Length: 485
Image (cartoon, rainbow, N blue to C red; front, side, top):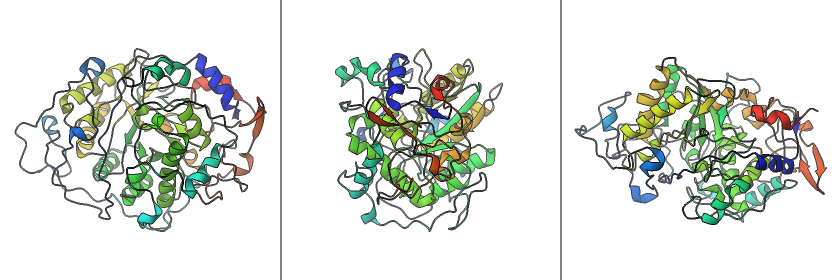
C-alpha cells in the first residue's frame, strides 16, 4: 500500500491536529562523554547536579513535587546485588553498586533467532575517535557524510519552519502562538497521523520503552527483562552506542527493538535542517556499524517535534514515536529522569506512574510511557517499582515493545529485513538503498528495495508517495489516507 504525498498529508492533518494542554518539557543532564571499553565498572556515586541542564517542572503542571530530597538512612555502601533499593533510598545521593556484565557475549556472525531475514552481526566495533563526531555535541554539518545524507531529503517537501528558540514554550511565545499550524508537540501536544503515540485497539497494553542508553546500568535492566520475559523498545543515543557497543548488541540480540534517539540529545526543533540530519544520520550509522541493521523508527528527545522534524525523519526512513498524552493533557511521562538531579523524589515519580496506570485503564487504546535506562536510579525505579506495578495490576497490563503493540513485525523495524513492498527509500541513490555510512552509495537495502522508488508529481514537485514502512497502517486514523497499489 502507499500513502498520498507528504504535502497532502500535512494539509489534511493540520486541520485535524489534536490540541492538548501544554506541558513544560524536560532538560536532561548530559551523560559522560568518555568512551569506555569496560563491560563493567564500579561507579563511586550516581549523583547528578541539577545545574547541569535539569530544569524544575512545576507541581501545578505535572502533579509532581519539585522538592530536592536526600535518602534517609541510606547505607554507606550498596548491598542490594541484583535487587533494588527501598523506594525512599532511590535519590540523587544514593550509593552505587557495581555494574553488571551483559547477559550474553555475542561474536561476529551471530544472528538473532527471533525474526527471519536478520543479517549476522558485523565485525566487532572498535572505537576510533577520528571516525566519529565528538560525543554529546552537535555534529559538524560540513562533513561529507552529512552532505550525502542531505540528499535523502531530495523530492520531499520539507516545511520552511524557523527553528524554535530553545525547544520550550516559555521562551518562545511567537512559535507557541503558531504551534497548531506547525504541529509542535512540545507546546500543545499536537500530533500528526504519521506519529505513533499509542498501541491502537489494544487496551491494557503498555508499549514499553527506555530512552537515552545504552548505559552502564542498562545491563541490570536487561537481566530483569530477560527474567520476566519482557521485550521493550530501546531509543538509543548515538554517543552512548559507540561508548557501550556490547550493551547495544545485548539489547538487540535479546529480542528488544532498537530505534534512533539522536546523537547528542538536543531539542530537534531548535536545530537547522542540516543539524537534524546530522543528529539522525550519525546515530543511524553508529547502530548500523555495531549491529548491521538500520532502524526505521525514532523518538525526538524531549518529545520535541514539529512538521519540519517529522518530514526530515520520514525522508530518512524513520517514523516518529512519542509517548501518550490523554485528551485532557495528561502526559504519560514518569519523570524518572528528574530523580538523579534531585528535582523530584522517587516517591513522587512512582505516584505519577500509578496515576498513569489509572488513566491507562480507562483508555480504548494501549499506551506508551516515557522511562529511561541512562541512570541507576531510573533503572531501579523500573525493575523495582514501575514494571512490577504493571505486571501485578488487577487486571494485569500486557507489556510489549512499541512496534509489536502496533502490529509491526520485527522484520519491518529494520531496513535490511523489511518485507513491506512499499518501503520508502527516499535518499535518491542510484542503487536503491539508504546511504547509512554517508559514502554516496546505498549500503542499507530493503528486501524489497526494487519496489521502493515509487514517486509521483504533486503541485509541480516530485513527492515520495510511500511514507509507511509497515505492512499495515501506523494508526487506525491513517486508513483514510491509504491508497491501494
